Length: 135
Image 1: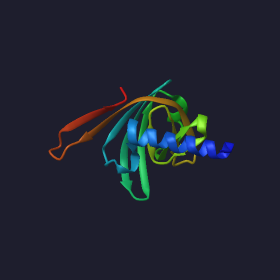
Image 2: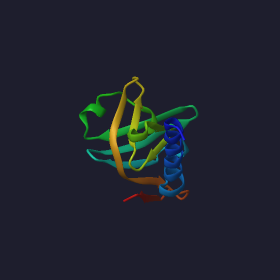
Image 3: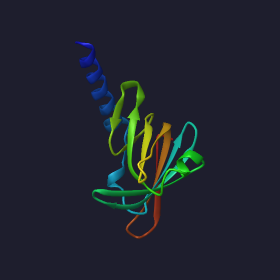
Image 4: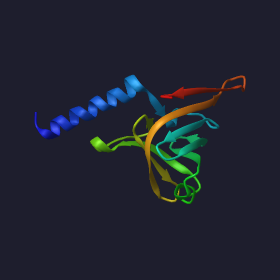
């Protein structure tokens, strides 16, 4: 195999590992009001779904990072980047991958690698539940 073929094979293997074995979060499948608490190497991020109506996505982000707080009012897309393979998975939050937060102002922020995440949602009876990923 040539180098580009090896690289493509590594990317496919990594995507399969992320989606089939480790699991992750497909952001567009969340409901309004859902929240994700994401731990990276440097900061915790609280992502609260404000609006999802295709193709509009609006997420409020709370974090201690001053850089992120000054970027804009809403995040309009969350993708994941795996630097070693120069691989981006759209609409995904995955373990070991950096989140790419795109703001309504056009600013893009790349976080450190994701270490863990907790999903907080609402049941039909309006009681809250949570699910820890990779913690």
